[in-house]
Amino acid sequence: MRDYGADSVSVTEVAVATNGDVVKARQMVRTLAQSSGLSLVHQTKLVTAASELGRNMLVHGGGGTVRASAVVEGPRKGVWVEFADHGPGIEDIGLALTDGWTSGNGMGLGLSGAQRLVDEFDLDTGSSGTTVRIVKWGR
Amino acid sequence: MTDRVPVLKIGDVLLVSIQTDLEDQMVLDLQEDLSNRIVATGARGVIIDISALEIVDSFVGRMLATNASISRVLGAETIVVGMRPAVAMTLVELGLSLDGVRTALNLERGLGLLRRLQASRSDRA
Ligand SMILES: Nc1ncnc2c1ncn2[C@@H]1O[C@H](COP(=O)(O)OP(=O)(O)OP(=O)(O)O)[C@@H](O)[C@H]1O
Ligand SMILES: [Mg+2]
Image (cartoon, rainbow over all chains, first blue to last red):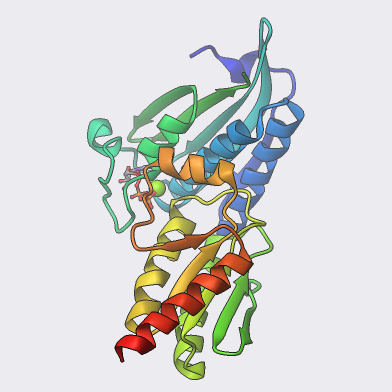
């Protein structure tokens, strides 16, 4: 994935430490999706993915930071979102991305479902934390 | 303290109209409130109106599915009404099937469905 975070001039961010912060992050992403002209369905998919990844960051990663930016590539407009935590990381990425697999008592759909809902998905994880970056493009 | 979603009682139906972007604790509280109210009121039906919800993620989806099961055990049917088309499309792609959750297009149809379900239930009784 292109380094959209470094390329972008206006990145907004929300620190996530509570459930309420996940709502704030979701709203930040929705606002960007609207101003970037994403269709209603694309907005809904992006915000839903952001909700899943924001919750994972809080529940499994102990909280972190959500950064987001509008991105442009040629004629395309889209939204880039990054979820970064300093939690324990994901031990087995393949397993974590399997539908229905959860290390806790979730449904195990958040990570795999979020990946399906967006156009670009980057997962970077290790013992010092997890960073997920996603992009949803408009039509 | 987080806000709670109001649960209204109209006849023998409990009506929940979700008007705000819910944080997870509100979702859990709602599930508990609904179970308690079904028992306290003897309600036979529950309608959850989600027409104002811009997204339904796995957390809210799970609450809807769990609530449908719990209310059934407690003798009430739950109907989820007003799901936006974009939300339905997203839910399917997310992989959430909402098994066991009855849905209707809008409040009016939801109430109609409840009435029919109750009629067929009292026929059998
Ligand atoms: N940021 C993270 N840090 C550490 N582990 C994570 C992180 N995100 C996901 N995981 C791991 O990946 C697993 C799968 O995540 P996924 O979101 O699919 O399911 P879940 O969160 O367990 O359940 P739910 O369906 O409720 O989201 C989690 O159970 C967890 O073990
Ligand atoms: Mg999850």
